[in-house]
Image 1: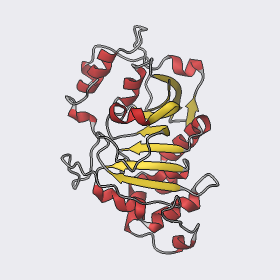
Image 2 (image 1 turned 180 degrees about the horizontal axis):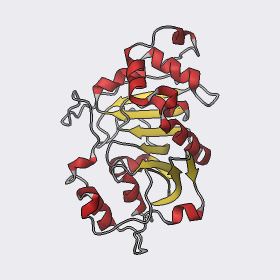
Image 3 (image 1 turned 90 degrees about the horizontal axis):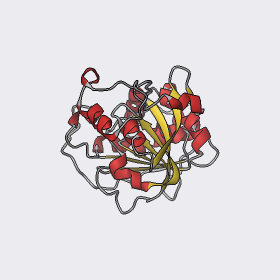
Image 4 (image 1 turned 90 degrees about the vertical axis):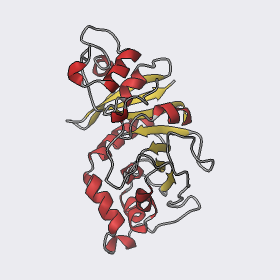
Length: 261
C-alpha cells in the first residue's frame, strides 16, 4: 500500500527541518565497534553540553516513557541488532538495545550520536553488560540504506516518522520483531498483513506493561462489527479524520509489537 497521497502521516519537525532534504551522506559515530570507546563516567562530571541538553529537552533522559516501553519489549524480543529509522535525537533506545543503527535525514541531529557526553551518558545508564554500539546514518530511510549499513536486524522500531515498513521492512530478519507506533497508522498497516506479521504484544501505557496474552490481543485491529481491519480501512485511516471514517475499532493502543513471519 502506498501512502504518498497522505502527507499528514509524517511527523512534525523543528522549523529547521526540510522535507525536501534527501542527503545520503553516511555519518559515522559510535561506542566501541571499532569506532569510539567511551569511558563509563568521567565525562559525566563535565557540563552536559548542547547536544545532551537538546536530547534531555526532547526526551527527558531517564524519565522518557519510551524507556519502560523498550525494556518491556526487550523481555520478549531479546534483540541485539536494532534499526531505528526516523529516529530524530532519540538515543534512549541504546540504553536497552546493545547495537542500534539510527537513521534520519535531518543532519542537525547527527551531533547527538557523535557527542562524547551523550555517548558517555548512554554508557553510564545502559541496562546490559556489553559495550554499547551506536551508529548514525544521515540518510532518507525511504531510499535504500547506505551500502555501509548492515542489512539484517533483530528489531525494527517505528515511532513517529511516518510509514517505515514499506522501505525498511525488508531489513528485518524472519522471526525478528517490529515495534510500531500507531500514531501514523504503521501498526494497523502491519496488522492488515497477517501473512507477513503477527501481533504478539500490546503496550499498556497507563500501567507500563506489555500485554501478550490472547485476551489482551483479541480486541485490537477489529472493528465494532467484529471484523478484522482491512487494507482499505487502513488506507481510510491514513487519509480521513477519525470522525469521518466508516468504521470504529473495538480497542486502540499507541504501541504494538509484531513478529515477522
